Amino acid sequence: MGFKCGIVGLPNVGKSTLFNALTQTAAAQAANYPFCTIEPNVGDVAVPDPRLETLAKIAGSQEIIPTRITFVDIAGLVRGASKGEGLGNQFLANIREVDAVVHVLRCFEDDDITHVEGRIDPQADAETVETELMLADLESLEKRLPALEKKAKGNDKEAKETIALVTKALALLRDGKPARLAELTAEERAPFARLGLMTAKPVLYVLNVEEASAATGNAISARAEEMAKKQGARSVVISARIEEEVAQLPDGERADFLAAIGLSEPGLNRLIRAGYDLLGLITFFTVGPKEARAWTVPAGSRAPQAAGVIHTDFEQGFIRAETIAFDDYVAGKGEAGAREAGKFRLEGKDYVVQDGDVMHFRFNT
Image (cartoon, rainbow, N blue to C red; front, top):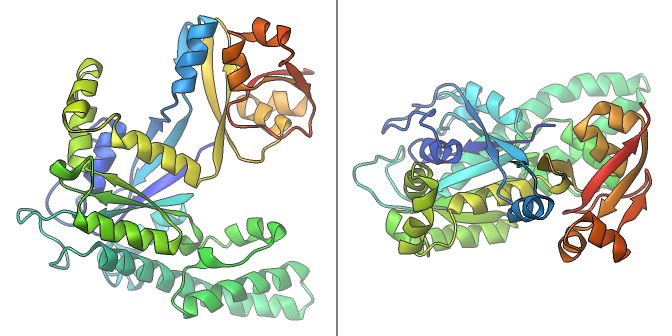
């Protein structure tokens, strides 16, 4: 089960530098000219979770395997991308394939790094990208509508339902608003997502500041943060340049380096967790002497679906799930102690998995 966050933004805002830091490689060329990222670079990164090490220590696990999330570094967008300007068509095609958008905004001054529009204004940058995505979504839906209407005249039930959703999205887009603001019932969410609208995807703003402002942000990032709040969007302040440096340091030197600039952990940890939360994901664990492992499921998943993440046979033959909450596992110093304290539970197929559950699945082969 893969979950992808696409890193987007105008050229020269720090996308590739951020991607390099995320993947701890120089896979994405970071250069001072537009479109240096021509093919989308893809990197899987571990989701930082101190609970996993705690569980492994208690269980004496030989190996620790974190859950992972995928980041895609997408070519820079310019004004007119919805009409094919720059690498517009490729940019838009790549963005449609991700689950969430990580929008990097330039919040630093640097005369040596040119801005494609000759100014430092993250709010305007955000509006440029959002406008291009809205125009592309609008064109896509308007092209699709006649065929749907033709099917609906033939009493095609699915076409009628789709038209209702398209109409909701079009009303917003024509009013200059993203499709993610659509008011949907629980039943409408899945078919609405299948429309493949770029502006329906959740957004996280990364406010990229200069090295000196890595811990506190600056006046430019503060304005961008306020913009994000007004949109009901999340934001994270990061210095991509600092993060790239930190990612290349030996593990033993990172803590001292971060402390020296006023950070308790890499900003990337906050970014990865924010992206994970943005996608509505939770983590459950399997723990034993061989390995302690974290697994990802969408919030609201039931026990059989969680079992299926490990192996499809587990879901198909699901009997029940042996479950201990993380805090109870720690308090009991392991499974035996949790059992003695009455915190060991047998859950059936309707059990909704909770973040931090330590689970073992019983199934028929």
